[in-house]
Length: 337
Image (tube, rainbow, N blue to C red):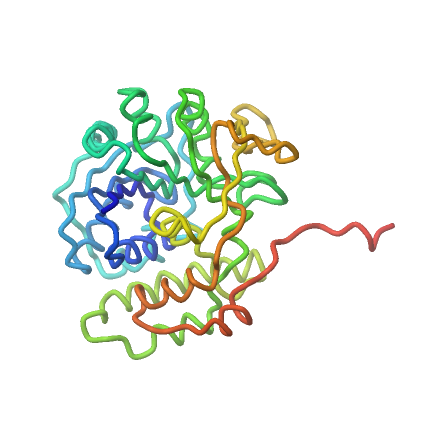
């Protein structure tokens, strides 16, 4: 049995990812740690504690870094709402008081020492907690089996700035620190995650008439995902949403669905226009590089599994092919020549 630790900045797609992970019986999720990113860590931790309650999930939650390692925090309330779940918690006055900030990094180290190669660390937000853990004990963190990071973009456009992906942009020094201390990372970048979306029409179908024991989770998801989809409709001309974090969880628990290429990766930390850019020379695929990049995956198997576990509904392969698969945006200059 593989052991999973999830570090999250629990916004909307993180919420979907956590539900997905909680219902994946072939892995043990040992610990949830929280970090500032989509929203401040206080809101992130509240979201995770609320999900833990809704899912009847017997798991420890440890909060972590409230700011990046060396810069001001940038959040994304316009994408995820002020509370990270489309303002659902704020609207309903749902709060949890029994938590403290600060012990995520040492708990990451303890888990790495305990489970070693049997541990997969899944990072769904900025890598601040991971970097703090490396600073405590790099050797222990190097001994973990895998670190799977939702982050980076290696071709085309990013989602923060022109060529940066949000998680890396928020704390590029953290990712840079991890890489430069000999820790290999499996990146699941926008290049991959934006090849699949969940259309609004499909989401509405999947959340129609939920099971009684899923009623409150469904109410949360309806509010959160609709908020998230409204943002994408306004900014990406996408009437639906991306599943960045659920795909990353799938890369951790079902790696046989994914193809990775090795590469030596660097992170830009100081560029005026390129801060947070992840740089890999993919013309020369480096088998001995410092990390790997997910470049393709079985989107149909993932989407069918995701829909069944999160929504308790079946999705056909034909639906995935016709409604969910997409091409990423690339500029075309041919019309101007």
